[in-house]
Image (tube, rainbow, N blue to C red; front, side):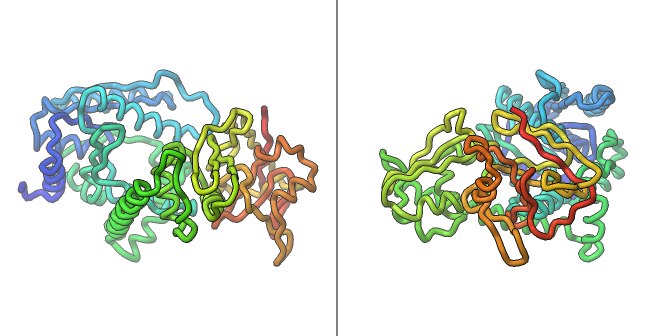
Length: 431
């Protein structure tokens, strides 16, 4: 024990997992600088490498990467600069692309070097991630302090530390982090939650970040228990002909999802909504005859009591759900979804928009849209009434609100109660 709470927390993680080589995801920012300095005080520096990813999304990114490298070298550790093999050019969200790229490059490097990967997420990051998922209507899954991904041991030694403890550590040891200007931009939801929402919650509970961390730890524990139960059921029900679903009819949706995901790895990669999983549950509810269900990127087929999965044919491949932050050009299956902002929504082609994130997906069985105060109509019927050709219906953009409620069949019909006349987004599918 060093007497320093933060150093002791990092030392406890190292003592438990005993990694021989450490690759630290390093940006030079406050969190990663704190982690790297703490590691240098606890282990031989020859065991440590600082991996810096230059996404090249901004003109200043190369200079910032060099500044981060200088700080790491001053601590006496090896520096590895990782660059993408191509610049950002595909449709969609550049920040999401950057996160995915950074994770992939760091995991690839750690795997090649036989090193553990250490990331500097803290308790406030955990709280913000939980909040973001709640705002999107998703299950608030927490980050793990330790996990294995692609054979790489991934550790987050600072996950229980609030940001205030990290700032105090930097002040105590006179460490000056690199400042990323995008962290102050209100263009990004995480920053808006960090600077506007978290202070309000902290006023109610000064330990709110730690409270979120405890809640996330409980969720992780419950998820592990669910996965363990699902694995036991999977082992009992897997047969050469497929997954025997004859006993699945009364399963809670969360348990069915875990078991079926264990059976078919492609489902773990697909971005499926709750409606998709409800359709899968309906497929598993009976064992008579043969039925099939097309999902983004694959098809599930039940032949009597056995469920099997196969890759969807290119012509059948459905678009994956998209979280849209605003106008842009987004991937939409093998096509593209063009989203344009208009000043005033005048027709059903225009979806009212006030700057919030929208979820857009393809239609799924059971979708209904409000057509009156207490009246709903099946989306399939709306598409039929609009005389949309059958081959285009699986590609029709559906705008989703909270609780998977259909807000609009883009370009065809708005849900009852949505006001027109203000700013809006216009959708079109480009093949």
